[in-house]
Amino acid sequence: MRSRLLPLLIVLMAGVLLALGFPLAASLAAARQQTVVVDRIDDTARFAALAQFVTERSPGLDERQSTLQSELLRYRQVYGIEAAVLYRDGTSMARAPLDWELPRDGETRRAFREALLGRRSHDPPQVWPWQGGARLAVASPVVRDGDVVAVVVTDSPTGQLRSRILQGWLLIAAGESAAMLLAVAAAIRLTGWVLRPVRVLDAATHDIATGRLNSRVAPAGGPPELRRLARSFNEMADNVEEVLEQQRAFVADASHQLRNPLAALLLRIELLALELPEGNEEIASVRTEGKRLARVLDDLLDLALAEHAAADLRLTDIGALTGERLAAWRPLADEKGVRLTGGGRAVTAWADPVALSSALDAVIDNALKFTPEGQEVHVATSAEGDTTMITITDQGPGLSEEELARIGDRFWRSNRHQNVKGSGLGLSISRALLAAGGAGIGYGHHEPHGLRVTVTLPRTAPQHENRTA
Image (cartoon, rainbow, N blue to C red; front, side):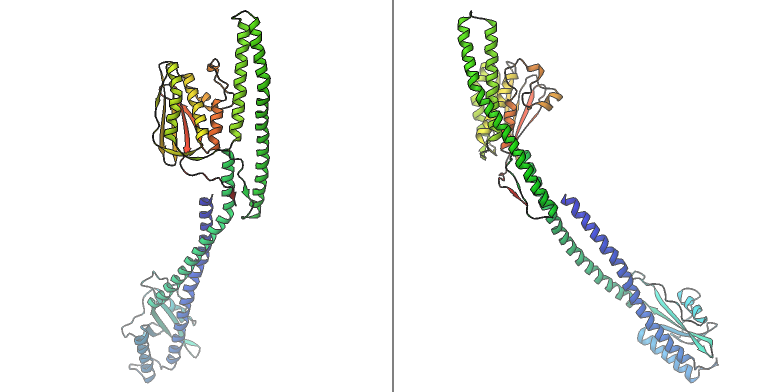
């Protein structure tokens, strides 16, 4: 969630900063240019005041015209700005440099035409840093006796102006970059503060889903709504744990309480069998059903204990433990004519050795039940990343896709295997034993036929402590 929320916040903050930065940059450029334009207006006004006292055109230069010409030349020399005082027809009264001519079109011609109307030319178009050849033209009229007799024109290079605008933009960019870094840091802290309780709640939910029902979320930190959610979650977890505990206690008590009456009943059946002819079919059927009921009660008690007992996790040599279970089951496999092969590769994982041994016993027993004589049951261990795997494959009839989806359910047995001895609880017990230690069990097809059971175990140390927000 953080990987989705944090980019969204960063994009929004970047959009806000850009929305503020672009107008600020444009405003700075306009302000810098306006400063230059005002300065040029003052210059043209001064030159226009000098040009007012120049007499009409004459073959030579009079004293005032000579003064105006020298002022323009000095202005050009000091500031590098081209300037001219032009009569209405565009001929020169004075100019600097001496070869300057009024362009036929462009911004300077437009400013000249506006000044002929008796008003200062409009502000020139905005100059941007990337416009290398841009120039700034400003024109003011020379008015004598209410009439426009000439126009003062300045044509300025924009190198310094563009440099100042670019420097201002760099400062704005630096400020926005600093603001963006602060915003990103604030967003990281904000998302961490908001999502930390969510992550803790997710971890506690996963713990409860995998059988660690004592996991809780400490209602501290984060927004008030999430703290309230944490308290509600803890209340729900307490209620669920209580209900499950009542169910386990009921199953365990019922199984335990029924064992004594059932044992007495089986004893009476045996006594009754002594008074009946040997080989009586009815008494044999009753004896078989009684034994099957005893197995079911034993399995129910084992399942209740498996779901209730806490796992004693330790770093375990899975290869050695698997080898021990293979050795224990090999006599039964030899008796049935089934080859029990494989061995324990030297791999380790965190597991409860007793629970894992019981789970492997149930899986191997199930594989031997359904593997025909002369076929093979193979057990192998392997490691991949943070997971250790034990794979048990048989060459029995296997299961369909629909049956694979239901395998491991309590009391479920395939319709094709109803005549095979069992209660339908063995794999459920295995799953409960493995889940208590953070392990898992999966089922799949084994080619060309049979069932593949994969037990997965974590190789990293478990975290048993309660989560805190």
